Length: 626
Image (cartoon, rainbow, N blue to C red; front, side, top):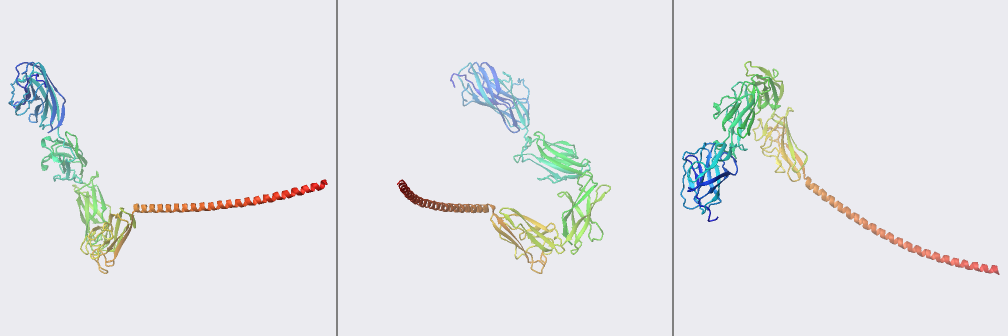
């Protein structure tokens, strides 16, 4: 920097008493003119973040001691929601700060013509810079920070210049910096929203179904939404509110205390962590509740609620266990679904099972509604341990309506069977490949030819009771592979119509795998779920496990070997053929030579004969002439 530049002192001032942020070039003794202020860009932030801009100031200094100040004012927002920080980042005509400069506070004379909420720091700090010349244009850059903003909205920060005496009368026009502050949405995947049936507080899991009787004011369930950011609670001042709406049947209420909520309307503005309670409004059918971020528009929850009439209209009985233990109580035998005229499941009807015809000896059984099964679940108790066979039932429904409407289901059958098996067969595929999923099946029948009663067996249960043991406790099931052990000793085996299955994967090593099960007890003694006629006998399976990859490689190697052998044989055959051809060629040469010799001899003999004949002719000629 030139040593002939203007001497200036730049004071960084943030005044809190009246809310001004002031950055000043300290007191002047000459006129300062041609002020100019510019901001590089507006900004958008989220609550609790900071906005930053670069403010550029320029002015003409006619004397070496001329100074100027920058003041910041917020025209909107809240004085409790943030502060302005000003700091010198570049001074094109000033030297570095001079040590020993005392802090300075500039006060507002009350002559400030601007209106708005003023913000600033609690102390003032003067930064002093030096120069040596007058008659220059001074240019300074400042970092401006809007910080500690806790309320969403639009903030307009106005800057203006004054002379360095600290007077509040502006000597430049306003320059405005606009900062848009958005509410923190907290709408990441860690935010939670759960719906719970009834009047108990929602827990960290959704209820499978939420249903209530249609009478206005009846509580069907409640929803609690907790907004989180990265799995952690967000500052209460940074949370957006929620909008809860319901379409279809039902109405809503909201309160911080679950029991204090009352039915208010179909669209509510709700605070984070408050309960949204769903009430019946007197109509039947389905209502859909949606929880949405009021600012972000993010849907935190969509849930369906059903409202039913107490007047039953239809009933459907479904048998879940077709074979049940004679003389014992079997649970969850039949599911009975009751619906109203709109097809909505009715929960408050009284349901019982009754023998379809008199004289069976069986008794009426009551049922209880299960929200998990969305049905009335019924148990049946057999009248005698020695009474077996099929019995027909009907489900009787009595409504909770004033008329106590009564309807009945179509008849359905269940069969009382024994819990002791006279036949146990275990089967599995005879072959498979390594890693294949296979099903091993156990089939058990009792003395009447029925499947054993639907129940759980093995597992060390007591002898003679539902769930009796299958396997011998001395000779436990034996397996050739430690990774393939279906129906092991002590394992719970559940049968449905006498059949139990288990899915396993075949070992990774090829070869035969086997399983051998020795039935409980000894011959002649009934033990657990095994009749004396089969006690101590065995059931076995064998599965041939192949490894297609290894076998394919072996087959390929064998094929390659065979091809090589074929090639060798072909080469040998070719050599033999060549030798035979050579021999035949030699024979041909020899034959030609012999033939040539014979032809030569014949020609010689012919010549001799011709000569002899010629001589004879000559003699004759001579004799004739004579």
